Amino acid sequence: MEHSRQPDDAFAGEARGELSPRAARALWSGSAGLVLGVLGTSVLVAGADHGRRLPVAVVLVLAQAGALRWQARAPLAVLAVNAVTGLAVWALLPAVSLTGALLAAQVTLCVLSATRPRRVSVWALAAMCLPAPLAFGAGGPAGLSVYLLTVILAWTAGQWRRAQQERTRAEARRAVVEERARIAREVHDVVAHTLSVMVVQAGAADDVFTERPEQAREALRAIETGARSALGELRLLLRAFRPEAGNDESLAQLRPSLARLDELADTVRATGITVHVHREGALDVLPAAVDLAAYRIVQEAFTNILRHAAGADEVRVRVTAEGERVKVTVVDNGRTRQGSSATGGAGRGLVGMKERARLVGGSLHAGPLPGGGFEVAAQLPSGDAS
Image (cartoon, rainbow, N blue to C red; front, side, top):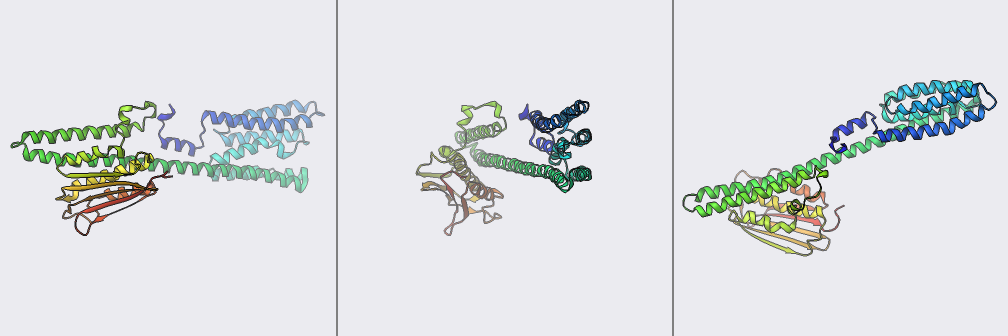
């Protein structure tokens, strides 16, 4: 199936000049129709008074049209065949211009220029210029100019098409890299937050396992709930790579969103930290990208608090939609642990949050507060992020 092809393999095929069967057929039918329509008509008109030469010339034109079928696979060989047969047509019927007789060769030169390295197409261009003295002898300076102009235009059109393809491939590669980075950020956010909560809960369960077994069981149940939620989100991420699998309503309910902010806060509350969540404004009509970015920023802020905010026992989350902006603020009352940086010691955590905000057209600031604690403040567009 076409979906099973890896992107890098597809790019490699395009770089080698490979066309899909449908594109190859379309190229052949279009170029063969052009040759038969233009050169074929010229041969029939010019050969009307040459009864013996006309059938041979017609066969040569048909041979050129047939050879064009393989121009995408072997353009050099097809160019040689069409150049020889074109010169033969011109020799049989001098009334047909050399430019017209070599029309099929010019079409192949264009394809070769578009699909093969420039060093190869330049040699082919030089070879196509060799009959220029014949064009001068037959039509003088005007005939020479027309011939050289058409040959150079054919090669230039191929180069333009090649440049277009290279830009398209570069954009596609960039899109793949960005998508991989996005998936990596998603996996990081899911795994880092869940593991941080599980570590805290496991430590709490170990501390009270003997004296307060019921509290230990609650911590273990919180670990199970967090793990199940993380597995659901990871399945949702993997589902993005399987478009043929269709939609799953149960997985759609697990999609990260500000509507699930209370569930996210509950995972932190289960560790013993008090979490206050305040919403204000129309948050249910945000673009999906902004909604996800806001959720992930809050999630990463929670993760940083659990991992790096020593002594934090209270967190305030405020999400407000004001005009064309959405403000997301997460403030804790902890202190930065020894060895942690001013960025909260979160490694790439804050870098990832800033990147998320930037990708949707917003901004993010994070840093310690004068009276203690740490604040993450983001502003995101509430309209279309594009």
